[in-house]
Length: 571
Image: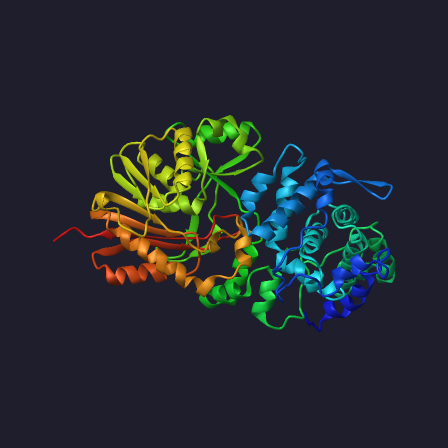
């Protein structure tokens, strides 16, 4: 990576400093880490080949949390080790972070919240962290074996973003794992992380921070303290974020890609559809931790009763009041959630069955076991509310798993009527059936079926049809941050073809006068309006009743799109 700004200026010296660890010039293994290694890497830091053999002999010791390096016993923090292993697994297999995290969690984990924050934080900021690794390593990030790159990311993330972790502790714990898993690399990891701390502090003074202005003559002393791990570095604040600016990237799309750790092609796609400023707002939100929304199961309880029960256990549970829209129902969402005060229950956008909840362990409560609620993002809940399924209707959900919209529809129908839930995957339908039993829902039957084809026995049978299609997931980057680091093939046009086939097949189930809802959890207009506009142009018997394109906003729901179309009565 070639740069010409202050980061590059200071990093040239820091690169040399990062290789002054013990035995650096003498250890052949260490030199392998900074030579052009045995694995191939593209220029954006996507590692093509993993060499995971080294460190295997220490696997048993790593699981137990300690090992010996020479005559010194190394005690490894199990939480950081779990986070590191999860990140390696995600990097190797391209697995989803939430699945790997749930698999990794065990009784050995002391602080699951710390592990989740570290894993999700590294994934959300991967390209940003790699930018500095590339700047500080003598031969760039390409020369470092990918497992060590993952470890360096965990260290840098703790230093930059985790207020609860002193910089010296982040360095020390990261080096311990390096010594255990990668003998001979401890000095390299130590040098690079400490060089980053020095670079961070020096740039802080160059930027003219209040700390630097107050006592400029002590700058060198404070840099030395930080280098020795005795003082927290001061970070340059930009837009309420603890990330440093990167002024030496001239191309706006490239800069946004690095700053917000998103595939550059995705950045260009989003900016092309929404403009650069809105694209940056969207990318900034993608780095946040999303709120938790729960749908109240009013078959079993009331919203007020559940909220009070959760509050008594220390949870914060507030009624979700919806989102502020500009103009008509088809307009795009503004960025700000509406007032969520529980007294304002007559608000036009009120969602009396949705709560915003904060607090740990909500899925371990008796209320969850008793089926009084399920987790569902508010944007998805809004779509089902607008569809308005009622008691006694026949509803078909063509891509039902994991079941959130199916359950919301069943509750709206007061558990009266029939829901045919179909999905391609039988194992997902079995999980859906189990969840329905927990919730006390009895009107759902399930069937394996490929939604791209018409199930003839249901032709013209449904009052309402939910067509929630597989999509790129660009609206849920906060929950699945690994998505934003992967290129979207053909800007989603291949997906749009599949989505169109599913929508056309789904339309066959709608009886005259009935309604069809097409929905996605993406903000990509090619997969949204591009599909529904094409469908409407070729199916003149369907007319739009309501459509919304929801952008994710800070403290609000995920990105989502839905379009509800009514089939005209036969003439």
